Each structure stands twice: as structure tokens, then as C-alpha cells.
Image 1 (cartoon, rainbow, N blue to C red):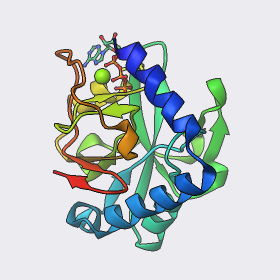
Image 2: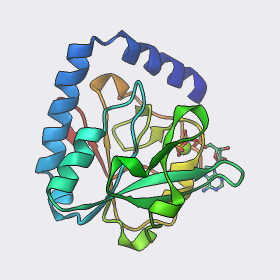
Image 3: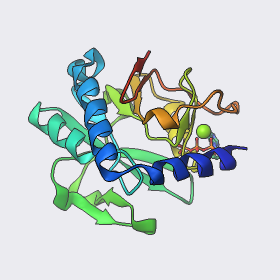
Image 4: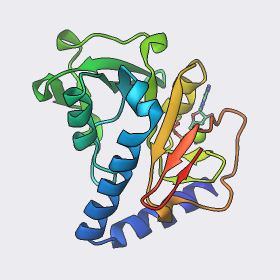
Length: 184
Ligand SMILES: Nc1ncnc2c1ncn2[C@@H]1O[C@H](COP(=O)(O)OP(=O)(O)OP(=O)(O)O)[C@@H](O)[C@H]1O
Ligand SMILES: [Mg+2]
């Protein structure tokens, strides 16, 4: 069921034109930057986006411009754990499995979960209550189970679905921002 939804949404995403993609993701970013949760955040956590994900480099650069601390995830596939590490320059990245970029441990520091004000949570499909289907690793569900700060997800309208099947470990996000609406 989750796998089918993942496949359907990814097909819709690949059908979008590049200009739609750019225009809509710019609009989401503008909304994000206007939220009080963004403005008040001193430390934000965000992924380094890959293909078929909303581009995060412009978000990272805006955060740096606003003197926020940016943290990015490092995953540990053996244990399923994830941590966020401080990120202040692109040369702190290395390419790991599956073409993902992650922070180099010797050049970055682990951020304490309590220090992060806002996590921008990635995902493939969402419902209006903030439940989500991620990429299937369970990394964010595990991380968010001990997290007390705010969460927001950016997504295209086509990633909103009626109701996401929920498992006990799934953790919803506080807020959803699409190109056409903000759902709190
Ligand atoms: N808090 C947790 N403790 C232990 N296992 C967990 C926890 N959260 C998720 N898992 C396990 O991780 C696997 C993937 O979970 P799920 O299908 O919800 O991934 P996802 O939500 O798509 O991934 P992500 O959270 O990284 O975006 C499942 O087998 C699930 O049992
Ligand atoms: Mg989940």
C-alpha cells in the first residue's frame, strides 16, 4: 500500500516540467521564509536534496544569509539511526551510498536534538493531517520520536493524498506548505 503510493506519486513528480518544478518550489520557499517558525528558528535541519526532491540548496543559502545554523542528516544504515550535523560550507560534503551527499564527520559537529528549532521533513506523500510516507528508511520517524521542536514539510499539491495508511511509529509533521496552501 505504502509502496504503491510511493510509486504513483513519484510518477506524477517525474511528469512535471522543469519550469513548473522551479516556479512551484520557489513559491513554497517564499511561504516557508514568511512563517514565524522559520523566522524564529536559529537552528534548522534540512536534507541535501537529490533528483525528484524539492531543491534545498536555496533554502540552505537563505538560512545562511539570515545567520541561521544549518544542520544536515547523516544516516547509519546498520542501525537505522540518523543524526544531524552542522553544515556551513559545501566542501563539508561527501558522496555516500546511492549518490546521497552527507556531512564529513571530521569537518562537522553533531547537533543535539534539543538545539534544533525546526526540522524540514522530506517525504513522498502526505495527508492533510501531516502523516507522511517517506523514502522507506524510517530514519525520520525514529529521529522525530525523540524530538520536541517544530516540523514542516514542503511538497507539491500532487503529493497530497486523501489518507496515508498509519503505523504506530509514524510521526506527523506540524505544518505542510505546498505551492498553493499552508496547512497547520
Ligand atoms: N521509532 C521507530 N523505531 C523502530 N523502528 C522504526 C521506527 N520508526 C520506523 N521504524 C521502522 O522503519 C521502517 C520504515 O518505516 P516507514 O515505512 O514508516 O518509513 P518512512 O516513513 O517512509 O521513512 P522516513 O521516516 O525515513 O521518511 C519500518 O520497518 C519501521 O518499522
Ligand atoms: Mg513512516
